Length: 109
Image 1: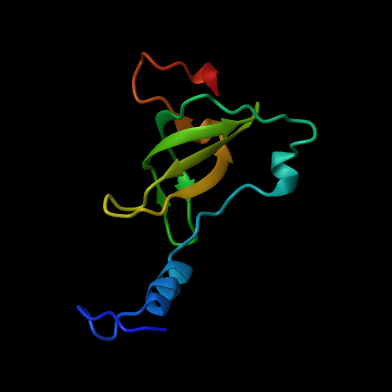
Image 2: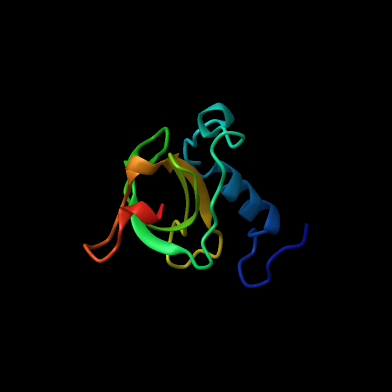
C-alpha cells in the first residue's frame, strides 16, 4: 500500500490493523435475542440514552443512540471518540438502557 506523504510510515494498512485490534463489545447472542419470537422495532429517529455496555476489558456507560429494540433487548450505537467517524453498535439487555432524564419514557424501548 502507498505511504502517507505527510506522515511517513503511516499507511491504510496500519489504520485497518488498529481498527481490528480495538476492543469490541460483548453482545447478546442470537439465542438470547431470539428474533423469531421477539420482533424488532426500529424508530424513525434514534433515541439518545445511556446504556451499560460490556467489553471483556471493562464495562462502560456511554451516551448512546437507540436504533432498534425488542421487548427485552436494545440495539445501541455510539462513537468511541468524538473525532471518530466509525460508530460501534451492540445489542444489550433492555434493563441496561437508562433514560437521560424524567422526560424520556423507558417504555419506548
